Structure formats: C-alpha cells, structure tokens
Image 1: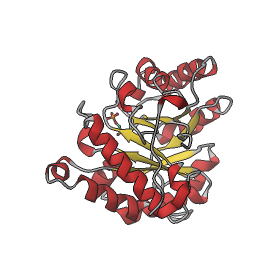
Image 2 (image 1 turned 90 degrees about the horizontal axis):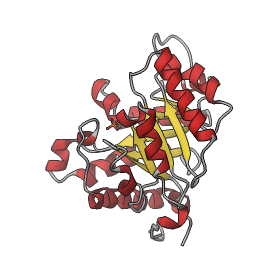
Image 3 (image 1 turned 120 degrees about the vertical axis):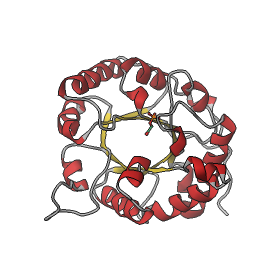
Image 4 (image 1 turned 30 degrees about the vertical axis):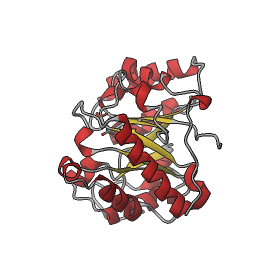
Length: 266
Ligand code: PGA
C-alpha cells in the first residue's frame, strides 16, 4: 500500500483579525510549531490580504506556510482593487485558496473563473487550494456527487499536479454552521474525488491532498482526520483561536494510522 500523503491543516482567517490579534495568533502558532514533536503535517494560515505580507515575513523563519484567500486571474494592469497571484507570491505566500463558496456566492465566481484563478496561482509556483462543495438544496436533491464532480472537473487547471493542487471538499451547508456530514458521507465524497483525480492525473492523483472543510472543531477533528482519503482540513472559525487550531494540528494521524485503498486508474 502506498503511503498516504502528508496531511495539511490550513487556517482560513476570512475577513477577521486586525494587525494586533493577527500577529499574536501567528506568534502563538509559531512558538508551538517550533516546539512540536509529532507526525508530519504541513500547516498553513491564510490571513486577510492586509496581513499577508507581514505575517508571511514573520513566519518565513518557521515551517508554517502562508496563503492568500483569493487572487485575480490576471497578471497586472488597470484592474482597480484586484491583486494578482504574482503580487501574492512576491509577498512570500506559498498557496492561495480559489473557489471558496463564499466567493462563488458573494462574487458570482463560476467554475471557469475559478479555473483561471487556479492557473494564475500555479503559474507562480504556489499551490492552489481549490474549494468545491454542494449547497443544502443540492444535497437534499441528491446531487452532491454530481455537483462535486462538475466543480472539480471544470475548476481544475490543466497545469495541476500533486505538487501544486490541493482540493478542499467543503459542503456549503456545513461552513460556519456547526453541522457536518457523517463520517461515511465525508468518506464517500473523498473516495469519489480521489477516483476522479486518478482519471485525470493518473497515479499522481493519489498524492493530491484532499482536505475536508466545514465546521471542523477541536472536538470532531480526530475522527474526520482518520477517514480514508481525508488528507487534512481547511479550518475557518476554529483557526482563529490558537487552542482550537492547535488541537486540530495535534490530532493529525500518524502515517501508519491511516489506510486509503489504492485503486488503479480506469
Ligand atoms: P468553518 O469554515 O470551519 O468556520 O466552517 C471553513 C471554511 O469556510 O473554509
């Protein structure tokens, strides 16, 4: 059996934190990470753009990666208010979230727009954390797999490989609500995403990290992180408090605790 990829725990700070509390949070996390002994884990924080440069500079001496929450698909020019992936990478960011459901909802971002943003991120050698997930209505209509497949295949840049693509499965109805799917439901969707990644990327699809996101907490993370093909978590609310975010990092399983059956590409 192949080794499961190293899990990722990424904190999405959304439109939260001023200079003081954002830097205090980064500082607390750095102290704990630098003193940590535990199973391998990639930790990232995605602060608002106002803090990205200073947090990235501060964390550059630590193993913690920093990411943005969005970017323009364009490179430069007359686009007031937009920020390019090149500008984000230039601040020291290692990854950028694209296609978060709050952007799909608030800014009408389509799969095509998300793909263009993902391409821009990968062009700069950052990793794209690409979010997909069904709404409550889609779930109630039994369309979860259909929606997730469509978003995955239409939003995924052609330049994707395991080194520059991370998928985040985030059911829209679970984000910030305290509601989560059952472990079986999470496992079924992640297995399906894995199968799709195999079809597109061949064996490299096994190494793409697939994160679960949506109301991950210090209490439910242990079980969620042990579902096959869950390779970490994208954490919103619980990433804003060092104690809850740290518990999630500490809950990452040892490599021999997870088994994810490998299926040959079709
Ligand atoms: P939540 O947000 O953990 O607060 O539900 C997750 C996300 O939106 O990435």
